[in-house]
Amino acid sequence: MTNYVPVLICGGGPVGLATSLELAHHGVRSVIVEPRSEVSWLRPRAKTTSARTMELFRRWGLADTIRDRAGLPVDWSDQAVFATALLGREITRFDKCFGLELGGSDRAAEPGQQIPQPAVEQVLRAAVATSEYAGLRTGRSLHSFVERTDGIDAQIIDGDGSLTRITCDFLVGADGAHSTVREAIGARYDGSADERPNFNIVFRAPDLADRVPHGPAVHYWIVRPDRPGVMGRLDLRDTWWCIAQGVDQKAGEADPRALVHALVGEAIDAEIIATDPWKAKMLLADRYCTERVFLAGDAAHLNPPWGGHGFNTGVGDAINLGWKLAAVVAGWAPRSLLASYESERRPIAARTIDEAATNMATLPSQLADQRLVDDQFDTIRPDIAEQIQRTKDGEFHSLGLVLDYTYDGSPVVAAGSGGRLTHRWLSPGESLYDRLGHGFTLVGDLTDPRVTEFAAAATAASVPLELLSHPIELSLVRPDQHVAWVAGAPGTAAQALRRAIGHTN
Image 1: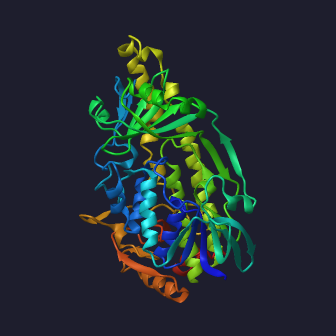
Image 2: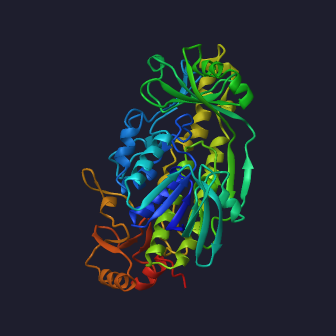
Image 3: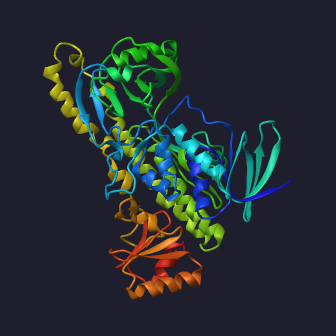
């Protein structure tokens, strides 16, 4: 029996789930196929959910749930400490890291949040499960598909090896670094890999936190020649993560407890929960789509984890692609709108890869100096601290990349537009963003005669448009909170709206 769904999503990680939820936000059905029946907690991978991603989760009503599930409250710490060992001597520190300090700030509707990726996935899975428009079919994966001019025929393989046919209008490949979808459309990664090995460890250590002399911090960077790395807490009980730099899989699995002891600075009671060897990659797909097939998240780009941008960039992909697919499926935007997905998101991924590579250029192994652990700590510490402050500030303070990226130059935004709508609080707890519609919103002085022109153009084109009075220049805001047109840009209201929904000629 043939199953039909407007959008089929291959991959049920955070990007695939986010794509489905964005489609559901606009009333469009989708089905996700995902091999994993359960979310694994053994490899937490991404741990930083950026302020921008939290703003996007707020649109779906999930920001508070994400915070409730986080093992570290957002106000617990915004510090990153550099030390000779977890129980060693402090070299220097950063505060206001990762946008964690933004609660109540006009800068953003939400601060960042430290939370392991599995916890985020569980929240998103639960939201999909309760949605009337989204569906998750676990134990299944994409076997093959044929793209036609009028749609796609996909074969889905079940856990027992049987095949199910699904037809869809569009297919999204959110199936990770080894993407079947990317391979099927003939796209390829361009870029490079860092050959230095890294070894992740998750462990339990009762009472360790009480002994840390540096106070709460979301990152502890261990700067010592014999065992450089990074550590942090996963919760306020006894679960920790660490990255041992320069350690390959064989060496790491031989004695992971010894690695933990070296990073901590002495032998402790540590229970190893999981290990995960990896190497950093800087890869970008040479193209993101065909006419009906699209890549998102790791299927389209991979970057080093330094700075915590990879997962967040993927969620940005999901929202950008999701609202555009929804507009086309609903019939109020032409398919030409979908071409803007690659032109808008691929440059953001390229910039993110570059930023992460810059962060990777100076890691604990590059900062280590034997004198820090000899008797010359007080002599060398000022020089090392200055180097750390000079080279690592951008890694912890990256709001320009997180909040200020722009789609200026996109074919579907007017010249001088494309940035995220400037945030403001309207009253305690009520964000300007909370008042935006699910479709387009015209924000500004509603007595401006152009408001009537925009409303008439939207009605004629069946484009969902809401009006919001606010003391800013009249601005046409897209469903993803980016500005498509601002007063002063050339053209009529009808022309501005046509361009914003993909009519580029």
